[in-house]
Length: 552
Ligand code: F6P
Image 1: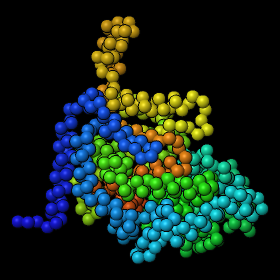
Image 2: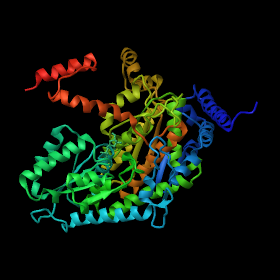
Image 3: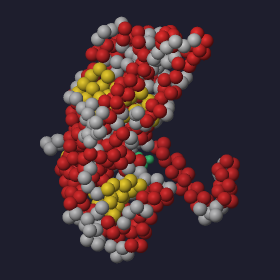
Image 4: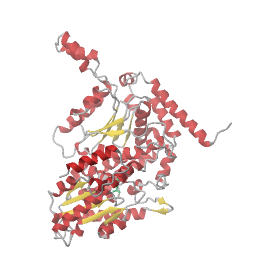
């Protein structure tokens, strides 16, 4: 009996997944070393470039046949159709009935992007021009403090997507930053704001309250405390020291921020995809309008590549498929993201939100429990620091943890000799993870060093590296506004492709709601303003009891 088209699609998908798992089975006993030994052109076959960006995935535990199976999976899962739907402004965020159009924020001067039949680009360009003009006014001192001074410090108050993007990018682009000093306050822990304010002068400090909803508890609490701090010093003029970025213009007005310094964005921009919108204002204040436009141009360049390159040479698609291979075919749940670049020291935290808030999902787009593992656990720190902390476990621990390395060939403002050492370490780690050092080799080396047989027997097992630990190396020429924009967009699209293959909605985040709701009701109990604990579990009641008896 002939099935429905949906049945046929599911059958094709099941076959495609079956092929991928079949390839994993075939390669089960073949280590990375053997894969290199059997193919002298492995690097050429299993690496890809776009301009100066190189992705080398030859140290992954797969070969071309396995990659072909993954490409087929992407095709069968409808990645290309999904991509077209997202880029065309269709409401691909199904649970919220919204389009997903961060790409429109960096689209070119001639682009037209329709949402519900209306071209959003004129408004996007108008807001971009407005917030970049404001950024330049703050930088040049054209927009001045109430006391007539140029602002020396800008504090961004926001959390999650309203913090991580500009905070990460401002650190990454330190060589381009020639504006006022930037500070980022996100945590509702009062020490974050208090410690920041301690170093600042209210007379020359500008606050940006960044919140898509303008209701987020942490941000609004910090914004009110910042206003109180300003009002204590400038009772009549505190308002002049505030700007806001939000989609909720009624709330910014209610907070008392002059519309002239309020910069909007749209519900089709997810918080974790919003650094390209006015949420990037602090970055624009740091690096200037031209720098910010170059940042957008880098992302636009990656968008064009993502939209047009064949799947087999499409960098975000390849990164996504490597992730699918690691997660679903090899069963590896985590990824260490290690930039060999101190200025990318917040990059793992940024991608953590991007990836884990997008694909940390347990049901499909249709609301049915998924049958495969979805979003990986992303974590990481910059190299070489990471080598001296958790890399021991990566090399010799009982878990296999794939690594994504990121590095730039040239340093900007670097000191002589440092960059070569940094890069040598990056390549060395990828090599050591992949090829390890066998016990036989360890013994040979120790014999050559004149160690006694007893000593060799004792130490050889400890000094053996199993290897066969996968990694991908991403290299570019240098880190600058253009290449940073391109790098972020690479990861955004990688997350998109994985979400399409897992058939989850990458653009909602209901998982953060329950905790917010509980915090709302526990607040009065923790503050001692309420005492009714009925309905609470015994553990929470016990913890509340401890807190109330320990308060000074
Ligand atoms: O943590 C949930 C979340 O909604 C994120 O997605 C978002 O980036 C963050 O909170 C901040 O939200 P808002 O910009 O509305 O203050």
